[in-house]
Image (cartoon, rainbow, N blue to C red):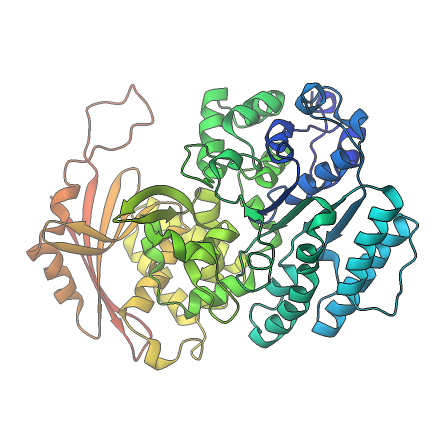
Length: 542
């Protein structure tokens, strides 16, 4: 059956290649038409990596080059759009050399010259990139007697590549600043400008230099311009969904719920529209495996470093991070705020929006299970300096010990894990209850059991709660104290009461009478000197 299915467009960033190759194209041309309608337009769209930005740029290129034959059967072909050919300057900043500001300068020159060669235009190659850019625009207007279209993909890549080296990032920013401001001085010669990127850096002279550049990144009108909606997923990939359901021995409804849990949830405006990451969706249909597809290319090192340096409590991402709208809009290399960067990069998404006085407040959280699990796994690797293979093996053993309620084995494995963390990885001054709680949280989170930290009760907060299908474990962590003190705190404040009488999850409707989950109270003491669990006590609520 698989050989009869339409090809999946995995890794295809060229619209023409996708159409000519007969691959599935989720028709976004109605959304694109909204950008084209007003006549001249200058737009900026921020989306996470692997979200289809390059394919969108390629589609715009095909439209402005009047390749209408490629759009046969698509919404735009039968619309009111007036097809007309325009000269196009297209630059993909991710392919431009950028290891130093000097090389970025040369790389931009090469990119402009390559565009000129395609158009049969000779430029004065003694000029710098900005003047070459200006000369190319003017030459194209003269040659075609038409205004020019400019498409710039991944505009911020030369900055992001040096995000951990602020001085180099600033130098590259200055080169880009001179380059991009040409679009302002030549605005009268331009028909359309479109830029994509991940971040919204403030000082690249894009937002300040182009007065009429419209940032549509959080606009309701363009919330589903990239990514697959639920309707699109079901309409364009029904055979793949059926195959996936069959391979996992699930019904179509069951497999759709599982796909949604793993990969849906990105929300880019206050509208209720949520979308799937196309990259993860396509790889799921290809491999039929529910794994962290988006992270195949790896969690960015700069983001891990930012999280390590930040005072933000990772566990709070489980609920909601609130941030004013103005703090989410722009930032720069001199000051890299973790939450806005995580939002732009796709590790957090918009969950709710509210008003506080005259200020708009955004509530952010993980978009889906894939992102949550992958980020936690990446952090666990970083905090323990263990490779993912060895961690996976240890986690499997830890998970089995919990499932089997073998707490002696569980704590033996935990102590072994803490003992294997390099002694010099965390300076002694940084060792505290929060550090141990974070490592413990990361370990428990990637076991796939339900985990809450600092869970509120009417009398206080539980350090960590872990829930399986049949049991609930309540942990209280102390540092340089005693397991007795930790256990007594749970009992005195009756943290366990809210977890009593929670029924066991039934896997078989024919099972006998209902049974409540067992509740275990666990007091832990952590020794800063030993950098490990020194003792633990377990009690069961009868």
